[in-house]
Every structure is written in C-alpha cells, then in structure tokens.
Image 1 (cartoon, rainbow, N blue to C red):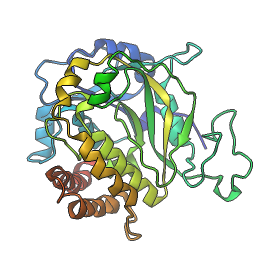
Image 2: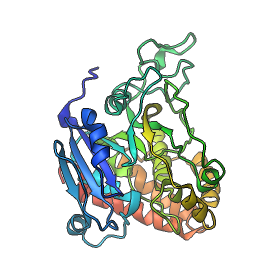
Image 3: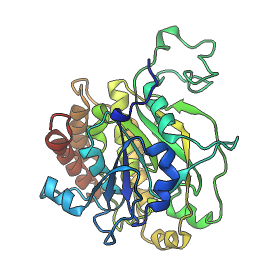
Image 4: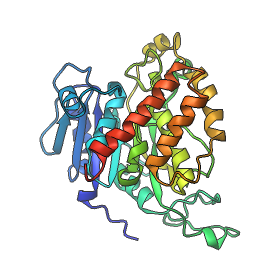
Length: 348
C-alpha cells in the first residue's frame, strides 16, 4: 500500500464565489502548486477572477457550463458550481476546499497539509463494520484494540474523506445568530471511520473523494427555497453526503471524518439573521434523516450508478409527496447519472 501522492492522480476543485482569490492561492501555494487546479466561477458572479501566477489553473465560467452541457435542469450557481468541476475532472481523486478557507495550524504550530492528509485518509482502509476505540488504526502510533476481530482488520476501501475547520464553525442560521461571536478553537488530532448505518452531515467546505468510483453520486441535488451564497443557506452538500454515505454502506466502502483541518474565515452573522426568517432546513432535515436511516438499497444495485438511480426512484416515491424540493432533487439525481456517462466518465 503506497501512500505516495502523485501529481497526476489529484485535481483540486475550487468553487469561486468571490472574485479576488489572490490571498487564497498565495496561502495554499505550498500545497496546491504541484497539482492541476480546476476553478469553477459561480455563474452569477459578474466580476473577473483574480488568480496569481504560479499555478496550473483551468477556469470554467457560465459560458463553459452552458457550452458543454447545453440545456440542463441542474442549477450550478453558488456552492453548487463546484460539482461542475467534479464532472470535468479526469483524475482519480478530487479535493475541494471553499475559497474562504486557509491552511490551519496544528497545536504544535505546524501548518497542516490538507492535501496529503486527505490522500492518506483515502489511500488507507476504512473500518465501517466494527468501531475501533483508537479511531483510525492505520495512523502512526495507533492499531486495532484488543477484541477487534482479525477477520475485519484488512478494512475496506475509503471513498470519502470529510475534513473539519477551525475558527468560523459551520452552523445553521439559528446557531449562527445565537453564537455569532463564538469561534471553534478545538483541534482534535484524530481520524475515524463513520460506522456502517450511521448518518452524519457532510460539509463541502473541506472534502475529498475517489472520483473514479464515487463520481456518479457527487451531485448538487437538493436546493432549498431562497438558497443563498453562504453555507448556512444551503443543504446541497448535506444531501449529497447522505446519498454518498448510503451508497458507500450499500457497496461496502468506507467514509472517514476528522483530519485535516482548515482555517475558515469569519462569516457575516447579520446575513444569517436575515436567512433565519425563511430558512426551511430544519423541517427538511426532520423529513430527510428518518428516510436515510431506514433506507436499504437492493442487492441488484451493484454499482454507484445503479445505486443513484434506485435512490432517486425511492426519493420520488417516499419524499417527493412531502415537499416539491425532493421531487426536484430526484430529477437532478437522474439527470446527473446521464451527464456523468456523457461527460464525467473517464471515456466520455
């Protein structure tokens, strides 16, 4: 098992929601400069992007999205524009970090190499079938504890790595308003596999995945009404993560969370107060969580593509009657599988 990270197997995908990316790229230069970088400009952003030299960057704009995909019902605005980057990438792995995040420092004061840590997470096995109380047994200094079945110690392939963040936490609007001055300073030096059947909120702020395998389920499916440009305005990444977790569970793959951390810049708490009045995310999650917790995909769904198609059908049947946004999400999921075959697959 080689943990060496090759330049040719990783794309960095950045969703550009602000025009001036100079400080972002300068801060990430030690970790990004050796890799190809895909920047997808928010289709609703009018200003030209400012990106410093010294990077191998390909920028995609609204005209590129329209030119490649033509008429599509998928909305790639806001944070959802990053999914277009997932579609056009041709690398085995994709790492995506929000454009308001900078490299974090660990408790020893060392700058965190988020790219390398994500790749370690993806290239070492996951252990979803039995929880190890020393967390990731493949990390240096850790191992399987007494009583861990030897038959499970080989683990399974890890397909999704969900990193965390310091400083400005990823809260919903209500919590942002109440804790607008609170900052996350708690750096937990740990990586763990999310157990089989356990659901959790995947944040798109700092994430990496095996694109070759998981690509068909990495879509911008769910858009709540009045969705904005801030993370608290959206559930697209939460929905995407729940779908990906169900698919990984069904196919015997693993998902990890924990390291690496990034440093997330301050949010505008006042805007959160405005969103609070109309945010429907609470009700949506009340419907979504029981659905995913009880969901079982059939044994005939043996590929990620199979799983997404089956999942879309179940969403239409069980969730769509409760809220029209679920019917739209199911339509997007079905369209994404077609787009992936025509534009996202390695031989597309």
